[in-house]
Length: 277
Ligand code: SAM
Image (cartoon, rainbow, N blue to C red):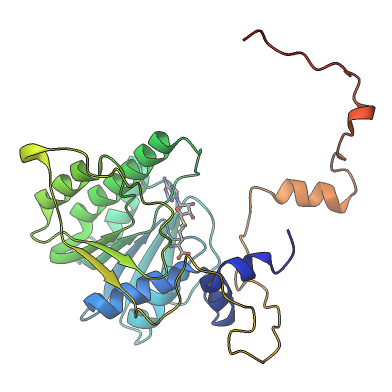
């Protein structure tokens, strides 16, 4: 894939780089804020599953800018520092991490908890959905300890088959639960068969879309010269991952030690076995 291929496919990725955001996700939080005024009166916030840090950037700018704001960001991965953001590296499903976060807010609860957590996708839909739900529940558990009464909890959710169960769990703690889809989030993760439960266990929450309808559609491709005319110039990512999983491969490649592609004629086994049907 070429250097600009992701820019071509994903307009929000490109705009994030151009606007100095560490990830395209920044637009999701900004669009949610536009709809729900998430940051109004907020001085203390927790960003769970925060790396590479675009939501923390938004929080830092919106509530940390005045110096009185306080943001705690947590992720499995290391994250480059941000002004006004305290970082904790850890697994939010672990008790020790939850305790560390909770300790930060002793006596001074947070106004807002956000969680954009996503597990490493396996491609097995049910497993991915289950893992995502577990992350959301871990975030909810932390939120119940650190959020002030009447505070706001925003979390990414896969609208899969068991979404009803998650809604009912959220409704135990919050008087109002709704599902919002920012225009910058893609449609591809929606399972058309979601919410299959019937009868009294079926829960429907209001569904809201946010972001101008005239704003860019995350499922469309746009030309590289968005303004139509000015020549496209490549912008490098604002914050490349600090220790990406492919780092070892990059080092080996630099040293010319990365395994070369094996051509069939070089392969010691030239016969392909087929299994009986
Ligand atoms: N909101 C972030 C931003 O704007 O830059 C992007 C978050 S990214 C989509 C999902 C993050 O979830 C990854 O950085 C991943 O490391 C984190 N994550 C996944 N499982 C986690 C866990 N158990 N504990 C903490 N972080 C986790």
